[in-house]
Structure formats: C-alpha cells, structure tokens
Image (tube, rainbow, N blue to C red; front, side, top):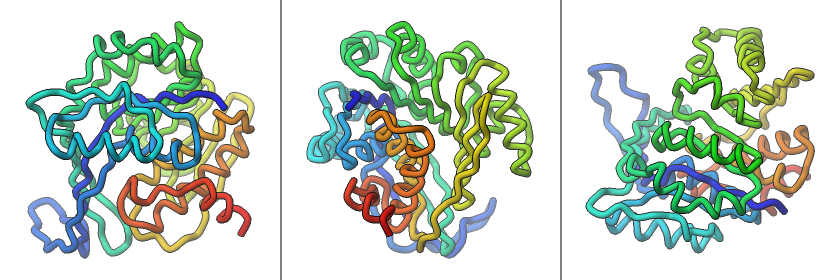
Length: 304
C-alpha cells in the first residue's frame, strides 16, 4: 500500500439545523447546535485512516483546548500526526454550517490557525513529503503554500491529487503538475471562467482544462453523481440513492476514498465507484468526521 500525505486544514465544525437557509437580510431560528471535528484536510485524512490506509497529515492547529483535542482525535483514528503543528496565541480554525430540512447546507469558514501554515513549515517537514507516494491537497490553507507543495512534490515525482475547494483561481503551471483534480461544478466554473448550466457545459469546461495540460478531472455532482474526463475518456458515474441527513464532508469522503483506492493500485473506474459508495454512506449520518465510514461498512454497502 502506498503512503499518503494529506496537507490541509483542521477545523471545528459548528453545525446548526434550520428549516431553510436564510436569504440576505433574513433571520431564521436554528436548532440542535453541535460541534464536530472537521476541516477538509482532516476529513480526508480520517477517511483514509478509517479505510485502513497508510496516512499522515501536515497542518496547523491553534494552542486552544479544541486544537489539542483535535490532535488526540486524529491519533485515535490512526492518522500519523507528527507533522501537525501548533500556532501559539491563535484559535483552531472553525466552520459555521447551516443544514436545512432538505439536507442542503451553507458553510462559512474562519481559517484561524490554518492561515498560518507557511512555505517554511513545508520545508521544515520536507522529509515526510519525500517519504510519501501520494500527496492529497485542498485549498483551506494559503494558496501560496499549496502551490509550493505541488512544485516540490513534482520535483520528487509524487502523485498529486488536488481537491480545489473552496474555489480559487490556480495558475496553469500549477495545474499542469497535478495528476488528478476533483472540482465540483462551482469550483470548475472558477477554474475555467466558464458558466456551467448543463452536463455538456461541464464537459466543455473540463476539456478546456485538459488543453492546459491537466491529465484527469473528476467533477463531483452531489446527488447527480460524478463525471470522469480525460483526453481519451468521458464517463458518468451515477450516485447511490440513500436517506441523506447531512452532506457535510461528503466531498472530502469521496476524495479520501478515491485516494485510498489509488494507493492500493486499483483502476480509476473501481476507485471512483468505491468513492461514490463511501460518500453516499457519509451523508446518512450527522457531522463530518463523525459520518465517515469504515472499510467494512463500505464493502458491505457495495455488496448489497
């Protein structure tokens, strides 16, 4: 099994249930406020750990009580935490998440300690990057740090998977170095500058990225499934129908599960199918890390 290094964010998710997501200027009454450990980086790392992958994480927490608890949670899950750093005098990042009666959500992220991860921190921990086979990244840490990691990972001939969330413009030189990019529709719009309304628009936008040097694109479509697009293939993967309770972390679960399968030398088709199953399972529970399935759970779901 290949070694995976996740470089990314660690957030405390503060989740509240609402009847509907408020419009501009509107006040709504929320219920059932809960706190969970989350953040795109941590969610993806724990996904890999629960699937019995070999995973380490590099990121930044604050020196608050929740940050210290966070590291303990990751260690219990099986994530190697030697490279999780602590920023003194700063709070751990957090996300405000509203979930409505249809299991749709709206999320506001306050970066906290995540924004203090630096290029110098990456260089100080370069040995773990050198010793890993696959590097999995998102965009809840400074973009300059993400770009530096991708450049360095390419120098060491690592396999690079980029989940470009939250949406941001990324330079063509950086995109060319990535082996797989996994945007949703909104993130694809930002990457290409093209408006997307139909599946045909998605394919057109993805092909624009391919012409810039990207190799493989997986566009996640929520309950509509996912599209895999390369220079030689375009294939639609259908989503599984489940009783959705909370979509928070589903995209992270998809990315972690996809990476797990690729780390085990599975085909792209098999990897995406497995990731679709894992993501479907994750929306049937509340919370991000709390909802991530085990390898046994995913295998049983696939069998049935």
